[in-house]
Picture 1 (tube, rainbow, N blue to C red):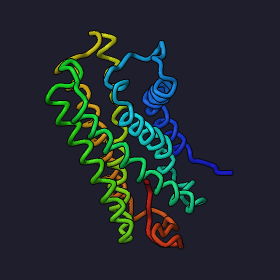
Picture 2: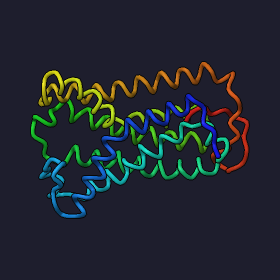
Picture 3: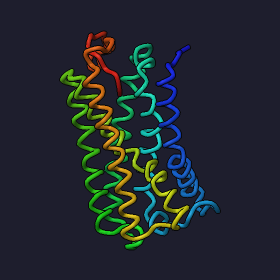
Picture 4: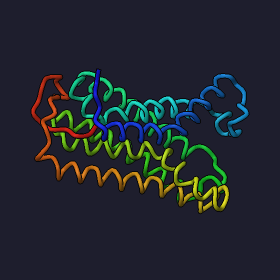
Length: 236
């Protein structure tokens, strides 16, 4: 039995709530594609229905990345089950890469009306996809070299980028309530703002971890060899 700290419960519940709408929507879309019919509560999407495989890959990568990734923030679990953390990390690397690369494919090859994706959102999505891919790559490269602090920083950034959809829901709700459904350049700005918020939060967390690292209790995980190590890791 793992006794999580209050702060860990807040982190876990917060990230799972953030993931709720995208995950439920993604599962519904997968069910729709498997059943071959449009579910009543899901908006019809001709692009998805005509070329479904990239969407399926994107959802199969994104859903576990958001949900499983939330548990990587919990120091109590990492300390009690270091092997689980390493196995989950390998799964997340694969899932994150699939999510980012399939997202890049859809952004470039799907035809979106200007109301759903203008030039700004197109370029932002390309930047986000490439950045997420590189963050995961640098995160893996860092842990191979046993550079734990760099590893955690890159993986935090990758997770923040991967959680864009959840924050986009939160950003869009006030606009929808007060003004109505956003479209065109307004929608591009709101979608972009969500990623900016996530990255700003990620950088703040990384900064706080660096400041507090000298007081941190050693995290007894050697992520490369599976033995105990004396390097501290306070996130991901």
